[in-house]
Length: 67
Image (tube, rainbow, N blue to C red; front, side, top):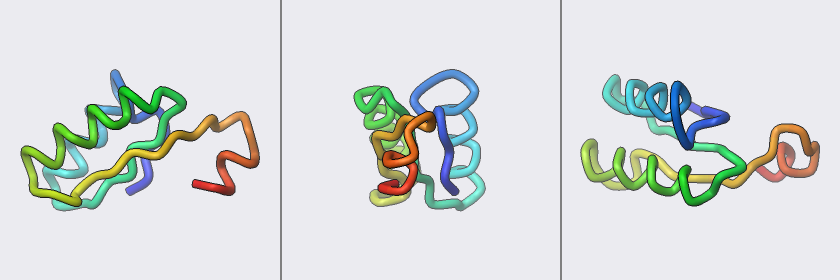
């Protein structure tokens, strides 16, 4: 699953829920520190390499393409 805005609030809870259901999650957010924190917490709870963080600003096409 690819979740934008995954660093906090509804986005991070969505990431956690998807991981709890067995999904591998890309935590995408402009806030890389927050995205990494969410991914680390998911990996600690559900196993390594279940989630990883990507810095992405959805208002910039080049960021979206890179992600």
